[in-house]
View (cartoon, rainbow, N blue to C red):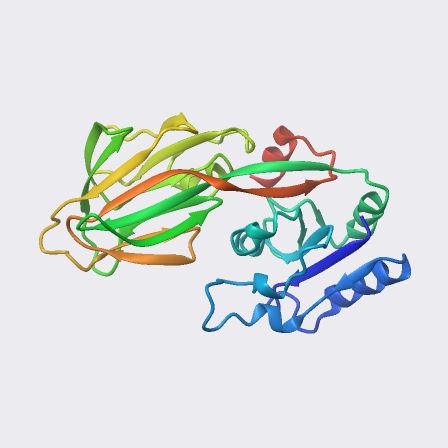
Amino acid sequence: MKSFYIVTNQKKDPEGLYTDSIIKYLNTNGACVIYNEQANNVDDTDYCYTNADMVPDDVDCIIVLGGDGTLIQAARDLNSKNCPLLGVNIGTLGYLTDTDMNSVFSTLDNLFNDMYEIDTRMMLNGKIYRDDKLIYEDVALNDVVLSRHGVLRIIDFNICVNGEFLNSFSADGVIVATATGSTAYSLSAGGPIIQPNARTIMITPICAHTLTQRSIIFGCDDEITIHINDSKKMSEERIATFDGESYCKLITGDRVVIRRSEKVTRLIKTSKMSFIERIRKKM
């Protein structure tokens, strides 16, 4: 790898010290590096964090400086580029990132020498229909969450899988997650941890009003449909959120259809830390 594009969470690197050190190291080693501070200014665009229109198509690697949240948003914004992402943790947890500032230069050396693997992660596509008309569509690397928005009342919804009725729920909401998302909100809601590159779709109710609350894991080719029911006049108090960022308000009668996306996220892996070791150290 010799051509790099850098995305920085400027809130975590306000003075640009981490960014500048990486740029200097890349330049010293003869690499081509592009850093456009304006690419993170995405007002009035379709992007949540990074303006993909400013990223050249011929870069070998996109380096993302931040935490897990920064990497997830970069993955959503930049997946049309089909370029692998290297996550550099300058945040807190860093479960998804491959390296941090203590080891980033040795990681870059591995990239110069093509000593890396590509970890391909499945994404979800979510479509929201109102009166059988598509009103919203987005993708998610971690999860699509349906929840209440505003007053603290439970919401009612039905879930179907491949057109077959699964169950009715009264709950704070429901999480539809990938294996990557199994260590995020779904884990906090009591869901299991899944091998992150597994091709699965998991449904985890959020504080369901029942004696038994369990996550259910389906195959990657299954289609999840959630029907929004009348919830005591809460027609404007529900919301669908994609990776905790983009969202669409829901009303009674809306239908949310979630399936595997044709898009994927490609993460660079140089770390020798195993999945088990990462869980032990990060969780």
